[in-house]
Length: 319
Ligand SMILES: Cc1cc2nc3c(=O)[nH]c(=O)nc-3n(C[C@H](O)[C@H](O)[C@H](O)COP(=O)(O)O)c2cc1C
Image (cartoon, rainbow, N blue to C red; front, side, top):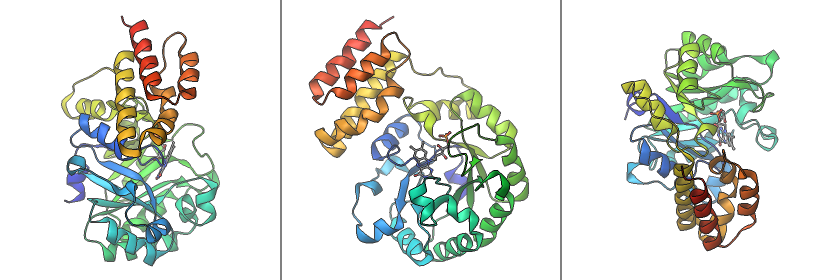
């Protein structure tokens, strides 16, 4: 598949480590047949040690799907990409992750300070795979180093087929507001498609982001937390003009239960129950006593008790 086919729905799921796992990707796919899914970042270093990890798992219907790689050693990245192309429709290179652990090793956003190395990575990976290659980066490392236009051009020149840009700098981490207007400058200066990312949390923000950024589409990250329908709702609006409302509390609780059961299937009961705790604040909210209920939920480690609490929340808040 070519890039234009992979991104034809104009919405992608942004990669989120510890969040966009096999289960969440599957749930999002149930609502959206054509959005571009992305895996969590997969470390090329880790992949050289262990190949058969759950992180690469996919179903037939997960296409179009991009597998994101992190790392900074061109040959190792290329070998990893070559391995991952048996699962992937596209390989994405992480050049935006801001966390200390990652940038200390010149991975993620640190590559924005080293465009020559980033180019070498793109060239080497590109020469070893036969599927499209994309890059995901930020506006720059700090506000004094806003090199995203030149950087994007360099990635294109090295062979990148597609860009996702998060409208913040590395220093901003996740603070402040994503600057969608700046993205328009990148869009004007490259020929490959660009998806804008950062703070798209609704149909309205998706529309505004597209207007300001002039991008070819939007990548949605945190907005999918507690709302597995968001991507499909944005797609329906952009492509058919159909406006669907966000899920009700009842629907969110049903989705939470489904998410929990699927994680248990995937990871086993003990790990699955612990894993989903991070999702409770996003599904279980917007009603009186929500915070107390969440407090109770995170203390529970027995599946029956969790389901019964979720059911009682649903019953108590039925319209
Ligand atoms: C918990 C978490 C994990 C993330 N992991 C990754 C990652 O593995 N790779 C990556 O490129 N970006 C990662 N990001 C950044 C997101 O892809 C996205 O760029 C950012 O959250 C801004 O978009 P949003 O406002 O739609 O969430 C992560 C973000 C969060 C909140």
